[in-house]
Length: 354
Image 1 (cartoon, rainbow, N blue to C red):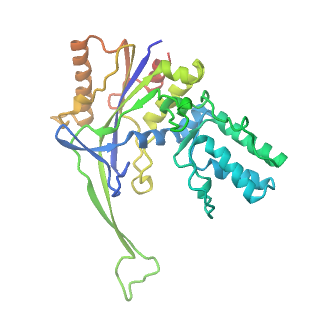
Image 2: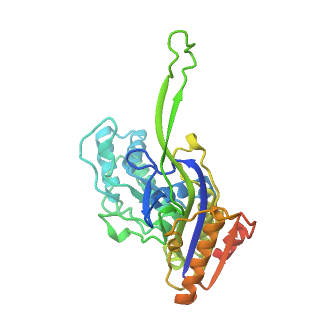
């Protein structure tokens, strides 16, 4: 089995605001002395793992990332007729297994039942939590020390196996990510532009005031993005308890999400949904390397060759150059190219799973 799978993806987005910074404008990065649009790996991973495409492919093998597990336990206990005070105490005891709790102070929003940091909880752990809460509710007594040993090494959560888990207070139950995702950047120089917009009040007939009912401004940008992903297939299968079938299922789900799911930022405003235009997949035991170096010099259309064609040519040339200098950097490769109607997603999926 090839240890590493590497994916090099080119996706073109129209005017959009896929991933905002703290001011609400699209994120950027300075690469090769040129400003590029950027989409963070965190944004991409969340879009993929919460997508219908991903869920349809892996079914119930998904974890839940939350601070609010104590709130859910509290609801179960109170619905079973447990009084507020013991229900709150037991809920804090159960939730506390997954992280430090916020200050012990009751509030209308139940903040005292929230853990301080997001915890990625596996399906097995969620089932154990639900069972324990119902048991405590049925017998009207607090959970004991043995029952509170709820943490498990996740073996059935595809998203945790791929993207890892960190529990600062209980590192024994951490999981190393089997999938590394780079920040996506445009292959060309890009600028963040400003969109000034106005809205009309439908009931304002303009008899007294012809002004807009609302005015606003938002940033946007457009471009062709390069994304690099490195998958440690051996680690992925190990994280999934050695289940080769589930590992293959996970890889197929990831490929469908990566190529078909867009970040969710301001989709209603821009409808910036896109499928990948080009994907190069590599397999081998060689040490992985990104091909982002191909775009240190911003790509520009030349003659009758458009931006995508130039980007594919730059990517292919860089790949060949690495092979010439270091020796073959992969044992085998497979690609699809929408512009040339070469290959298919199904072929790449079969290649990666095989």
